[in-house]
Image 1: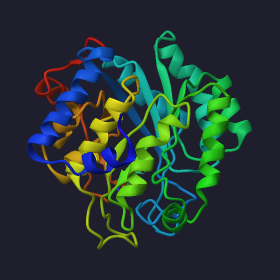
Image 2 (image 1 turned 135 degrees about the horizontal axis):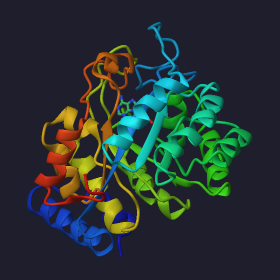
Image 3 (image 1 turned 30 degrees about the vertical axis):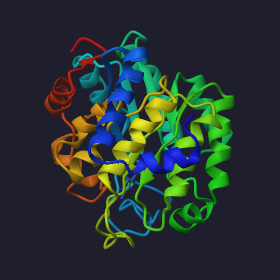
Length: 319
Ligand code: 5AD
């Protein structure tokens, strides 16, 4: 039905064609999710990272100061998430070995805060099988490990690591019974439409429950600082196509959309996304987690609820 040629063309639809694509995506979403949007609370546990991805300001060779939260810091923020009645705690951070023990230690305490009624979602990069197993045994439910781009050459160029390493980690996570998420950055310098089509097809090759498309943001302090940003409409079309191809997957509408063009996080929901993430990093510390550069768009509760309401949808939990 949607072959490669159709997908290639549809990624570039604009105007009336694009609206029709979004309407079809909303129908697919409604069939499975009705009007419900999943709301997550994210805690940014560390800005340290061993990687040197060319698009990311948290890359290892940048000599900014780095933090790693204590178990207390994390539990304090998790109790705020509990107080705000969200039921997904998303623990995200740069790729460092130290997060394994830290997060393994806090998961049971976080679960206790919610009397067990919480999903523990992790995004902590590549780790050995034993680390993923420890985290799973301690109660982690799900893990996002974005593949960033399925173009093996571009992936290696930009991340200085072979895509095979990520894929091995993905397979480990799937074997261990995690619900797994992948994701693509749209508009990376050197990315072809053909490889974006491959990104759209990834969930048909891996047993994932989440996928995402975020626009590339040229961030200061990176080798790609002067490259053009990713196209918002192409990103939105990728979201819509993912929804139509995989109605059951969780697909977020990301803050990077809002950063590039205010209002486009609502457009993400109009294009078929069904997840919004609220950021619980204290305002005084937002700049220390330098993703997308220091002037990123930070999604707070009011913004998230407004975006959901503007799209005519409801938070999946009663907030
Ligand atoms: N533009 C878009 N996405 C980015 N990420 C990191 N840097 C950028 C950027 N400059 C995304 C990557 C990473 C996630 C945490 O943030 O997809 O996996």
